[in-house]
Length: 362
Image (tube, rainbow, N blue to C red; front, side, top):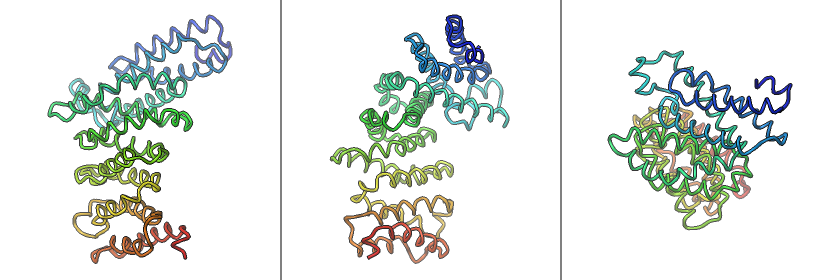
């Protein structure tokens, strides 16, 4: 039917068929068995068809209602099944029913997760206000979900929190820059709430990483805000989360730690004009990671280079720091125990970064 629509156009019969398809898609996508995966791509095609319909002027409030129903199903899927959120491990329900999933089954679930994300982004681009209002109505639940997620039996709350954060991140990723700017207050409020409640400290890896993904994704919006005590405080709190000894770039989980190092580099790069007051704090928290000893052996070279690139850009862009202080900062990073081969790479990065500053060249 969706293929025929391209040839037939949007006739009354096609309109009725599309409405029937939307109800079938929503009903089957909400199921917990394999039927949900089989209709996921069909749902995405239906949303794409609505985009064409909106362009041709045949779009109605009924279609918006159907999209709202699909949005609720997506939220439910992300909130109830940890497998959909992480793409890495089977949910307890699936393990109980089927045992450990095979590699092929895990790949299939990962593809399903990817299809749901694509579907959500298409809905966001088609009806950004619908998605924003849906997430806004869920925001009052956020502090309570965070509190419950911190308890010993907070698995269900953490899954719901992960689902909500996933929707928020995908929304920020799907919206065009001009639309993002029009909703900057909303994004800043959510980021401040997550930071204030220390979401980065939660034990579920997915939730903590989602927080840092959101912070990195919203860093350009944060940089566009006028300077104020609240703005300065929020930046400092996010940096503290990144540099925390229990999470962030020092997470005990190698995969999470690697991702957090990359996200930290992006966050610092996008906020360079606002980080002058934090330069010394950042360097003091990172300098031990540039030493060659047993405490840093678990860090990949790529992770250390991400961190050092962030520091080099930070030092080079500090307009309020004298050349003498810049030199001291650079020398402060190196200890007598720094691995020689790494130090050559680090020096190259920092000189390449700060040599673009005319004042330094002079």
